[in-house]
Image (cartoon, rainbow, N blue to C red; front, side, top):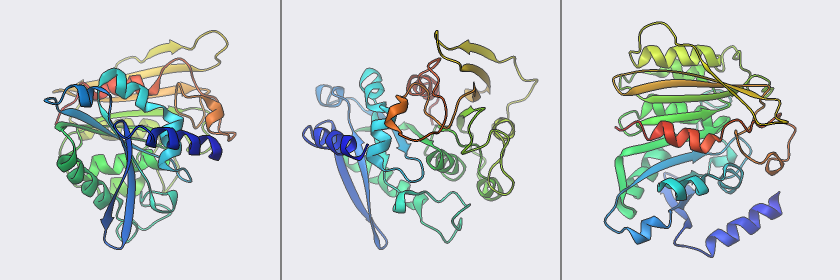
Length: 291
């Protein structure tokens, strides 16, 4: 996989208009991130573009996240910018496995990236979003809790609400929330883990309450996979006043990005559903939310 990633990055760097590795200095650390701009960014010089931050999983790199999720293709179709940040030691500070307050200042890194993006690119500040896989998904939820004035909606894959984030959550701003979780995920458990993260169901209820969404839960929609796909997707969504909370549960799904090519990961982390494309689902959800 490392060879494939290297070749992929080299091909991206040969097209600087589309993807560039950027860096900034934060305290004593030089932090890096990839910025991908769709072709429309050059052809429509008067237009501002939405931005999606896509955070890698623990032990992964920004390049591997770009290669695995293939979000650049969706960015081309729907004309938005994608940012792939790099975590220090390939990790993110989500409050377990690292001190919430004294650990790596990844929230400050995100704020610094956003400030620099505003200077360097034509971005639509009302349409800034975040997503991530595993530790990256946990961190996206931290951003929803700490920077809701900057992020209109967040989507996490294989990552319910971290308990330390819940404990430190003080902001009252509403944020669109999309959760994707596999029932057969053995890395991050559907039912949650004490002192680390809530269950997927409790995370849905937490954000529903936070966003002031009342009333009985609607019945989820069932989306069977194509022939030969053992997974089935259950889609539960509820909203009020222009803000939605959604929980997509993948029956028999593993610790994977729906619609991605399983061979790109190279690890035994379970089934990848073909019933949905995570990137398309996220963008449809994001596009309904503005700050």
